[in-house]
Length: 375
Ligand SMILES: [Zn+2]
Image (tube, rainbow, N blue to C red; front, side):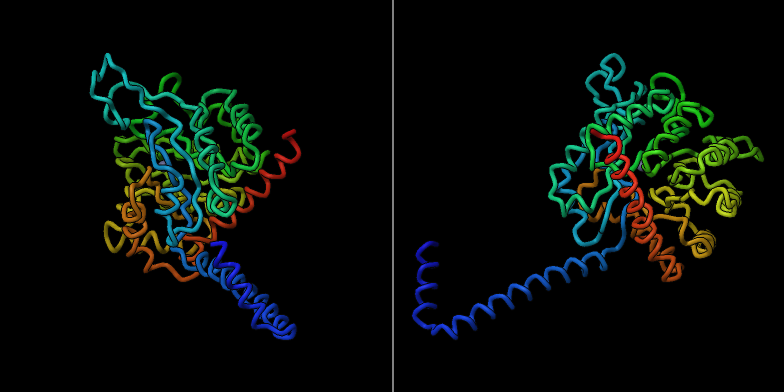
């Protein structure tokens, strides 16, 4: 390599008069400028051409295993711009007494309990910190490893911000009522009426952290014609926290908690309330997409609401450690009939712009809280 370099410079010196050397220098400068310009424009092109930002993504699963973040970046490729990044706060215990050698990997695989696994936050922070600055800009890590029934949950969140300044943008996805999961968690069952939940949301609002909350709107097998079990409590929770930015994951729908017939009324009620301008909805999860695209009528119904209130909905995948891009884009593709019914403005906002607005704002606020509070 050294010889080649010498040869080139010798040949240049042999060829050039001082005037043509000046010319070469100008040409070199110009080409560097052109290369830089094309690099910039390719970055811009990439950010304009991706399909979506993902407001709901799990890097790890219920036994805290997943994909390496560098591999996941390759999976995102030029299809996905930014990702709200978290693990899963609950660990499925492998109880030898219960399951013997049959190691469970999912909460439905075992009768053994789940427990809060706080190390997930250190894991996510470490994965994020292994990236370059440019790569980091594509992620918004979220704190999830707290027990929302514990008055000390807020202190855990504060401690994570202090241990990993410059990393986190929000908290969640954490769950209060989740079919099959809530009852399996060791210790007290979470509740929307818990002071511990109010305390942690107050802290998130103070620090500027965006909140991604999973709470089913109803119990799995409700009595016919009964009010949705948690609709009233969740609205009251939202009302108690006007300063917090809250994304209600899956609009409260679950695998078997179907969109209750007055789901649209619940959403309209929240959107129409001037005190609840801080509440957003994510439409992540293949189970939600399944309900939305079930019939042409259900698709149109959902698209009508989103077209009417395009600032309030975010797309997310809710994928858990996807092994390849095809699997990762599955939910996005599942929504194809729904995307077709959105106005161009609504589509752009739901897929990209609402994410950018909400998470950019949270990033800015959390960094300024850290500047004032982390020594
Ligand atoms: Zn999720």
